[in-house]
Image (tube, rainbow over all chains, first blue to last red):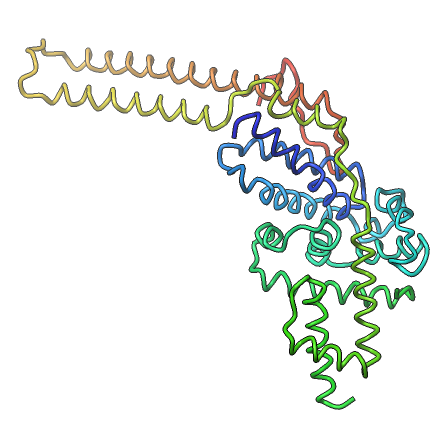
Length: 170
Length: 187
């Protein structure tokens, strides 16, 4: 991969990689670090990565970097109420027609999302929030399409159950 | 709820998720869905909630990669200080080793030739001295190779990665990794 192709790949996938990391980590600074590190690693492996699958490669690398960071956090830090990108985003989801409730409900939805396991959150974020194709997500996770869909179905039900438990079922 | 109803609920729930996936349902599944939802309040509620949650998730704004961070990425990658890559150094070492091995093999072959030119017979002391000189030359070559590799590594870590890191604002969340010190002994 030459420098020009590399920069085109980064330009094409930067928002997706960063968005995924932000939704997984709930920390804008950490998300930027993860995205940068993923791009640097892609550059280091530019001779081995086919530009056609660089998007999948970046997602897989970003996921691994996110897992590393999540492991380092304590459970308490994971659910802390400190300022974060996602808390900010929560207040921007006030559509009463889409989610019966206020911005508080949006924040609860995002908190419920953060309460899912890493793999459940990953499939929900990639599919439901970022709208990636099933095939692309399956390739990134290295699982068959049927497995991915079964995982997504379970993750949706768990998210709904969390919202019901929190008393904010839509 | 009867066993038949529970089975219907499970089938309807599976069909609900397929619908959320955007899959086209068969006519039989659609008929089952409609008939079941008309009589099962629990599945009706579940479908409504799942659809609402899906719409709410799709409405979440995804933060974009900050444009001011791109120059930092380029500085660490495509537009950064050219560096000696690890694979390249290994390749150089492999070539050097191959050349050395080839020279030794050719030397051995030459000595084993039955028709090689007549050479003066050397004494044991002369052979030992020649071997010592050969070892000395090989040692000098090895030291030179090691110095070259060390210099290349220092160049990468101190002037390449170190300089790039100095230009970034990466916040290390764990223990800070050891940074090379300029003017030090290198790695």
